[in-house]
Image (cartoon, rainbow, N blue to C red; front, side, top):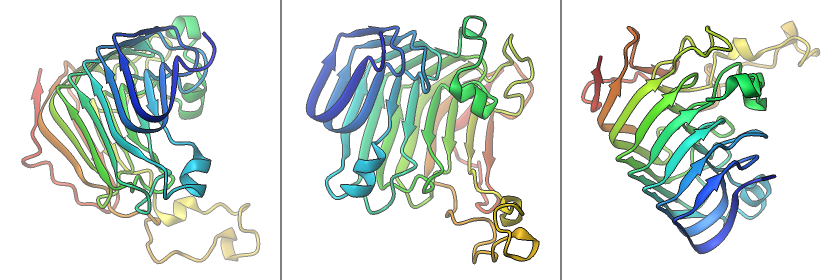
Length: 289
């Protein structure tokens, strides 16, 4: 099967009791949707062309920038959907290009399962476009994007989520989520068997925890390359008002009754941001070894 298993653009759409097997790019791609329900489906064995996700909710850049007043990702629901052995990850929400001028988003995953990501490295040689660019295996559940710091207003909820066998990548990875953006909730979630070295590269993703919340923002001087601004002293632009970059503080990610089952002696969650003083107390995270 070339391309996506299902490409969604519209409103009032129901996908029910489907098996989407062996899609080439994504099992399901959601470009724009309102009142979408995906229920009792299985999405598996997606492999071929990046991003290779079970589901990828990713707006069309032209729709986001040129028709932002009409563009919607509203009342999108996945209920009892299994994402199995999709090479590029199970659930990907690439919403970094959206900002606070867009309509509020509302995306819900209820009782969904992600089992297996990047599970055929020998056959694919671990070299999908994503792996080549990132030097890492894909994450089971990935939310965010660094374009505008994931500032879209609204709500994203995962309830009853089960994540397992993401052998190279993280179980949950939230990237550059602005504190002022959409509230993200993980509730009654179990993460196990993730972020382990792969047979292709035993060192891959060695710094990942099973759950990661981080910003791609880095200190200003790390961004300055002499070849980029040859006319400025030291080849660098004038320092911005915010020395850590132009993104706001990372936050608005909530964990309630989330359990990590891990046999490795490492942090079960990492919160990495140079500005936000993130406090884990009362986070609702627990560890089972």
